[in-house]
Image (cartoon, rainbow, N blue to C red; front, top):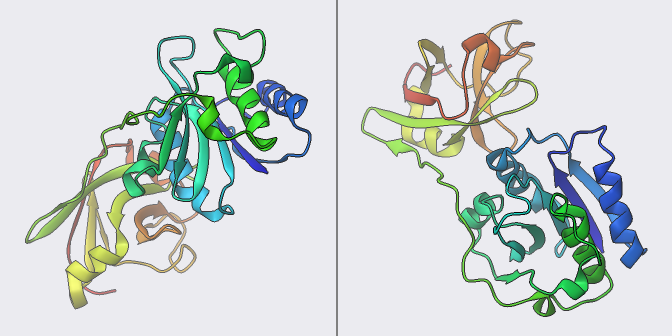
Length: 263
């Protein structure tokens, strides 16, 4: 089985190794891949976007273990979910909601059988003592239905949809990547179709950006540009710089797109 890890533990944390050890204690025949341990602490929304962006590039039936869990030790549930041909072990706190928005879950099971957990469960490390142990049992061939009862519905974070009007389209900054690029919730293909041959002008805060570039390197260093990111979304970037810092922009800030002069 291929097993991935996504956490907010940080790259120097020993917690990741502890989880991998807990998996291997149950099943040694597991191939493990780290998606990221650089999620901002307790940032469930960021983790949800990362999962939705990355999971489709893994083979069908890959198991993804997710620990971004500010509610660890509380009454929040832990689940096994099958979404978009992939399997996930995660807290039910919205971390699977961006995936579930795109692909309705085929099956969700509550983790309610302690016999598949570690014998001693810490109130502050369910990732190791519940999720990792369960992952090991699944890798050994356990049928997911044995993990607990069917779970009716996942917690969904609010995800705003773009507003398409006659003269403009309004979206928002969905996330900010490690380069400071502003990833929006606007589909670049839909924007180009809406704008037609006139091209687009993008506004964020008081800055207006003309045209839609094809890559970062064709404009001068320091220039703000709009382009299509690798997921097909409208992105705002600063060439060889950090657009988020340059514009003092945060996740959730409005982005406006109007018809402009074709570049």
